[in-house]
Image (tube, rainbow, N blue to C red; front, side):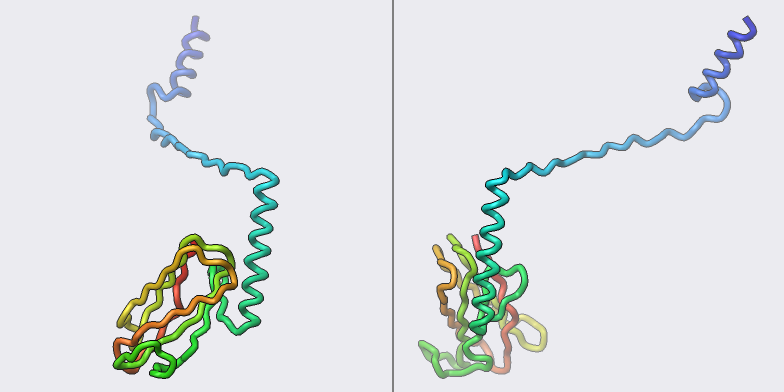
Length: 159
């Protein structure tokens, strides 16, 4: 009987009954996310698209376009200073002209570009077009809002 009481007391102490109480152990809920596996055909198609984009980017770079890593398009400023030359219509301060090529087909393409003065945005220009084919030059022209401004790097969206 005495051994049974000692055994009960040991079990009670180990389970947290009596004596010093142990702080509760926080429960950890780890949600696992599984990435859906791609089929071999999907991986092959994605690799082919990546090769096509890399080839188009290399071609654009060789033709003098500015190509940034991860961008779906390259661009070339046709005038780096404000000018009235080449503008399709007269602007009080001149115009910016830019040429763009995409590296893949874009059902919707948009370019956002900021006109800057001393690091502050003066004007934001947005130009978009639908069903753009790769390596087909697009021309954009923006009337300048002020003198002594520069253009920031454009941001492209290709869906």
